[in-house]
Image (cartoon, rainbow, N blue to C red):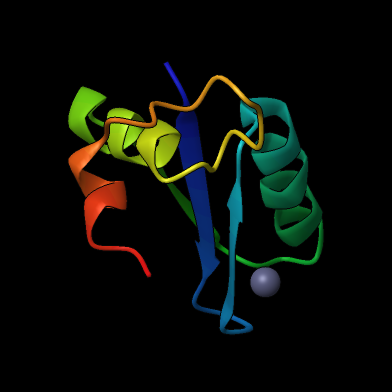
Length: 75
Ligand SMILES: [Zn+2]
């Protein structure tokens, strides 16, 4: 299941999203080293959002669903 980790730091108004927990953790560590107090939040995409992404061709492959209702109205 795809995971998105959002790191925010009120001390320097930093905000970034990571797809890997490890990258987010390193970012948090960086700010803590600077004496900041960063916060991080893990968001898990719902199955519905995942499917919509596939249907919209986000995957970039040829196996996207051509019958998706999301494609019907696309001109
Ligand atoms: Zn910071």
